Amino acid sequence: MKGILTLLFFTYSLVVFAQQKDSVVNLSIPNNDTTIHKIVDIKAQFPGGEKKWNDFVKSKIENHVGALINDPRSRGTCTLQFVVNADGKISDVVALNMQETELARVFVKAIKKGPSWIPAKINGQNVRSLHIQKVTFKTQ
Image 1 (cartoon, rainbow, N blue to C red):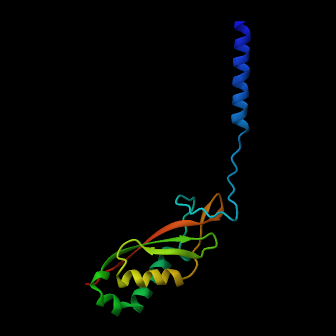
Image 2 (cartoon, one colour):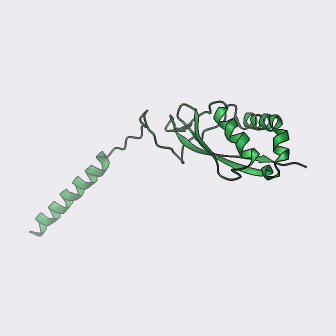
Image 3 (tube, rainbow, N blue to C red):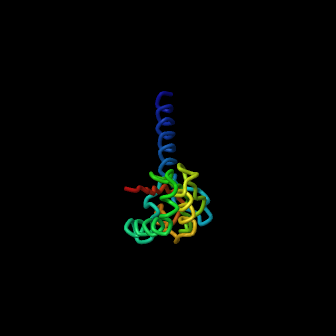
């Protein structure tokens, strides 16, 4: 009887082990995935990288410098949050702070109307991702 129980236990262990080995997780992401990812393999980025982003910010500040200077609440760092879709288009742009300032207004509009971004990637596939971007305006 003891030998049969040992054999059954050993067989059961093999079956359980085999089930674990046969479990395969499909890591491909469907094209119609609407998930907004916070953790990705490669983050979304402005086309041309950080230097081009800084040039973009500088041009927007130069175009609106009068309005920004006239709004003392616009001095500081505005944090923007938005979604970079799998095709690089931007959506759901919001200012997380300084919402009622000229700085927030200018940059929410600039991001909405700006160029498409290079989308984030997971397993080599473009995905929707949440992006946080900060913009600082100060006068001397």
